[in-house]
Image 1 (cartoon, one colour):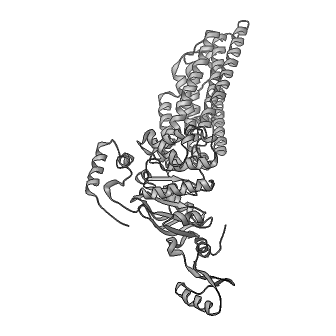
Image 2 (tube, rainbow over the protein chains, first blue to last red):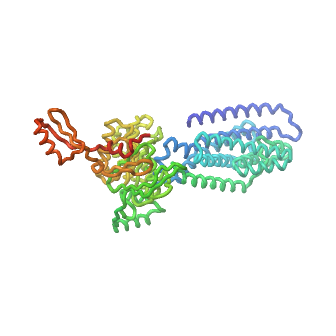
Image 3 (cartoon, rainbow over the protein chains, first blue to last red):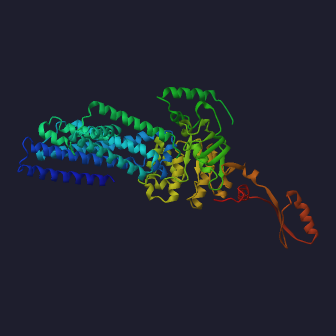
Length: 264
Length: 320
């Protein structure tokens, strides 16, 4: 599986590099509307797409590492020999999360920085903020890993995988609706998107990361970028990050409590 | 339940706890080679009034059972009798609805209980990519055992897998995996070994290996709760037998206590005659009568019920 992940990741980066090279080569001949910086727009748009791809690949990896942690492994009789040991159920659960985090977080960061370097080398465009967006992407993936772990306490592997990917999709749609809400100046859409973003904060972290890469980009270019689909209309800030950490801890506590009461 | 307070062991346990950071009973267990904490010796397993309901289904309806020190108790019963449920409660995998279960005096499922327990499930799997040595090392770390390589080598020799030490689990036969499972259950020198159908996948040679192993463990003072369908295995190794039916104990006792006289069989020149109502004391009279009738008598033996007879009678011929 490790080899497959590596190969697919290299394929993604190779295709992204080709796409970026092609795009930046051709914008030289494009006359953008007045007030729009074509290079900045192309760079931010492409890199936003890469961030979406990074988030998606990270989520896929996180879900596959955790979707069968409890019920799936129990049904396969892999879990019981471990649970009867003195180490305890909560330690096992935390260890599985940390193991998934140790794989997914570096993976997301490596992919993020690789895409950034490719964009910078091909288009001479660099994001306004370098490190924080990558950390927020990694944080979003960890939240999905935590939710998948929680789901594995109650759901079979397949059901859990479906549920988590549907949740992921719902979160992304909520973010897009939020962007549309800002364009149309619709309080209802904006409010709904905000509720969804706080209910499943990986989406809010992703939106905040998208916003951060064009934080200092103003004018028509900045406005067009924030329309989306790869532009963050919502700014989360420190409050969001603190909520994301608290959310992860809460999800973990519910998972531990559920696992402690589960008959195996 | 027998109690014996060893003041020196109790003092040592308290000092050991103070010396280690946090509450680490498995450190204490390792230091004392599997002795119970606080130096109090309890039954290896004590179950009282145990009830377990899964919704409307009553898996256990009030079970009392004890496994004493160095005792090997066999658990019998048809499928659905509650044997695996009882075993899982003892190991902390399932929570009881009512009643209590204690392992060496500690509540079943607590860290102290799990520290002195070894378990092999009826259905188990190990990660296929792990070698036998790696699997035992993992369980040593989980159990807090400091036996190191010496313990792993000894356990693999005990179950006849010393040649397969570096072999991945996925390359092992089912019988080899089962023997490896027994080895992992023995990691950390547990006080109580709980085996759920440990010989189901083994050939006769493998079963004999396990029987010999169980006798050796008994000699070393390890208590064993053995859940098995193989009556011949139970009869050969167990000190006591408990038969469950519909979540309740219907019969319990030593194999000798459970065996009942079924009459007398006398071999004559006219064939073998069975006297179902006769006992041992009737043999001289019966032989005299046969000789008086002109018969030649070649032998006589007392018939008693086998464990299979006892089992079938106890479960009323019920099968799953």
